Length: 133
Image (cartoon, rainbow, N blue to C red; front, side, top):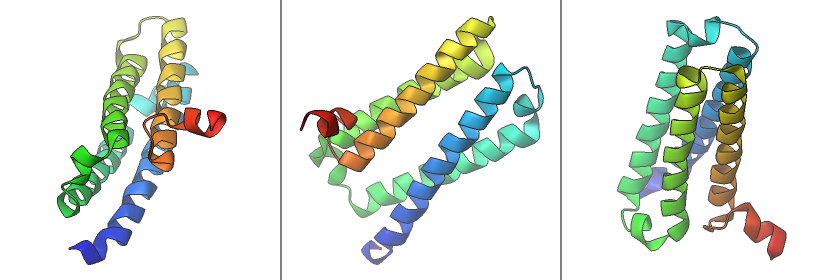
């Protein structure tokens, strides 16, 4: 299965960028007052992308099982993903006021950027590594 690693990684990266883009569009539209981002077809698309993304991630872990514990950046990335999901849920579903939605949405986008930077740098410090050295 190792021979498929480059293709699975490329799919994983594409789906991660697609998932973040869909969240950014949905969140911006919800903040603007649109109701369609919360409808089933749009949520279904988001769930489908995220399920495929998780499947690709699990395949990568299956191909390189030791990578999970050998790389500190991967543990940081997983922790940040959990934070990103929670912020996204609060921003799109739970927040009662527009100000809270905006704050949570912006925090989720910043967290997504940290996930991206951590994955690109292969370093737990992510973008901080690029800034300071």
